[in-house]
Length: 244
Image 1 (spheres, rainbow, N blue to C red):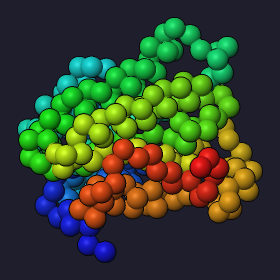
Image 2 (image 1 turned 180 degrees about the vertical axis):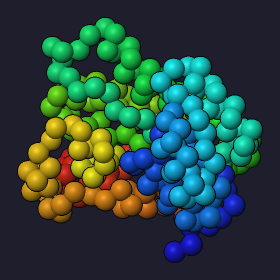
Image 3 (image 1 turned 60 degrees about the vertical axis):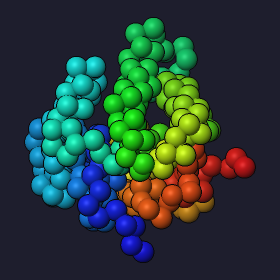
Image 4 (image 1 turned 45 degrees about the vertical axis):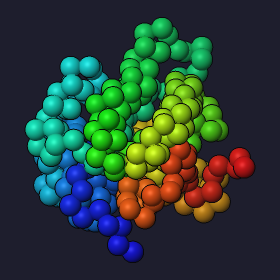
């Protein structure tokens, strides 16, 4: 299937590894001009070279780094047609282990960062009459995961944000959706201390997902073929989510 995004410009944050890299690679394969943003120079340059993307060196954990990313993106590819918002997950915690500083850090990392990227790039998409936004969240937004309290709470709020914005911009040719990864075999998944073999058996598909499978879903939602899909939270989880 031709996704008809050849020549479109795309920014993928957190795009040097894991789900971000898989998304950037999928978009690049479809002919989009992709910029990937990350803070680790060596990893970023290696990833950008592998998929012929533009590297955007920026520490996205603070507002100064976010503003730098926005400026560098505009200087290299202009205001992107496609925006994939991806951040690392907050530290694991139960509610008893959360702290006021932890909440502020997690909120900045997930919620405020998403808002800042949308504030920068949504209006130009509306003016152009075409835009695709995908926010990578987690299946924890719909079914809370033990010991991931920060993520459980904040990602659900991001889904509310996405759904609200979708109704405002659909008439301008702009779509915005969330994609919820389940157990996908990334470095972060390996670092959570989860028994991966046990996790695989709990998944109806009886295996962990591959990053490329996730990237294919993201690239489809960013395509001309997905014009009528917006305001949705779509899982890529091998059947883990049970809610209707």
